[in-house]
Image (tube, rainbow over the protein chains, first blue to last red):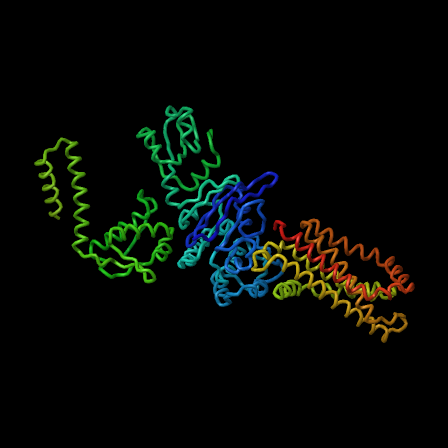
Length: 288
Length: 127
Length: 207
């Protein structure tokens, strides 16, 4: 079962295009949508939510068609972002009062517990909230209407490391239920290293891969060796390569072929998601 | 049962989980019918992905060391001690074969290898 | 829909006094000057209230979060049209009450005795204006919508006088009386068409 099914979605802008992206977000798991700034992560999320209409392609959320069944979908989806669009002059309490009646499954007790846990005063005005506090507030709203799917746009970017860790716990709490799913976008990949099950990597409006994180980290490898090993054919084996006068460091997407090719002439390291992102985004030869 | 994960160890996390649970079962620390944390609870406690813990449990199930009862959770399997012993013997056999292979590469005779093992055995027994 | 109206009420609660202030300023300005002050005070205050409601949405990018709520886009539009009706009825009735009181308290102002027909015509005019304004508001981006808001208010002030002469002339010719019964029908048709147009404009807009 998939929580989100995107099929061949395209959206063209003057300087940027989402190009026939198909993506399945698996139900019961956490998917991390990674990519550099400007890769199209936010656009893709807006397409999922019906905030932007695609030029072509379809979106299904929780088995229902977007936007035909958007009301049903949004009852069961929580959206977390720091650009909430809430009314600046209202207090947290007023904003809650304004939002709660829209949801069938609103749980006021739960909401108050989250406010307390996040140390948010209900009397505080929206315009007095920091970026991180806005994320917390929007998370409290999302978790208080029993959302089965959490869609988070850059949730960790405004948060301090302490709350980031706490957030991981909150998300894991939600994931104790098998029917729940989470997708979040980020350009900081270290948070994801811990709990994401799947990684979808978006670069320049194209989906590079959407795979189980462990498989990704197993498939790719960092290869380091002396400059004399490189020639035009060998360079082609790399997704990206950084060369200096004393050696090179490159990313290969098939560890096993690379092992056969280089044998013991090179050092092979496990890559981090950041390594994979860096070399893929840079591509080709990087001179340093 | 304790499970301790090292991020700096070269071993994949699911193998670390697998090994530690297996060790607890084979050593008798966990007995038949004892319940294990659910896949999702363990992922939350260790702050690792669900797929990681799921994979470890799947391996343990394949080795018939645990049973998953849908809706109830995971339990140490009723597969008997003979089976567990048999499993351990199999692993031992595999390791011994590797040792024999290595000793051949070192041009050791069977006698020499046996003497070497005896020596180590005695050293291990003297505190 | 009710939830959306409730939302507007909560969001605008603290700016209610601005509407009251508008009403007072317009009353003081227009009552001594215009025979048709009933129309203008009611209509402009109602319209100013409507644009307060839209301005607050633009200022906070509220569509960003409205779109995440479990509602259809056309319900957002419907609520705005409904609030236009509510503002129109409310402020015009208040305007009528104030004029009626003024006639009793300060008869030297010489205000005419307004009738129910005047109230209905005022409401109709407000709805016609809203029918023009709302599609523009939802079709334009943030900057454009801000411009439209100020443009409408300014044009009210400028056109108040000439329109009054026009209305008086028409009134005197008796032309209006014959067509009065057609007006509500035409207004409702226009209002409905405008709503339909706005939902179409808003349906595929990027937010």
